[in-house]
Length: 89
Image (cartoon, rainbow, N blue to C red):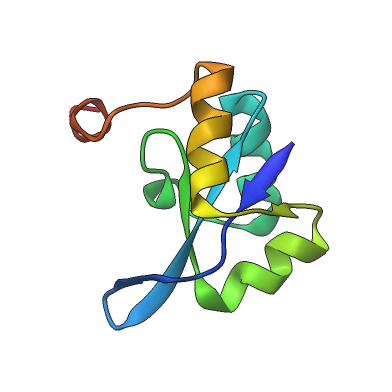
């Protein structure tokens, strides 16, 4: 399942969401491609999603959850990457 949190993370003068999968990176990449997200938006275990695209993600089937729920789901699925390992990609 694709998960998305509300756009509350500030960066570059905008607010951002996290888009993640609780199943696989393949599912996540396929969903992101359908939304037209660029590969550079992938941050190791999630995509950064600008606030303007939040409703698009919901319309495409992403489930709205809290940021904490995304972290819990990624850990449970074995997909969570620590910040250090995401930077080393």
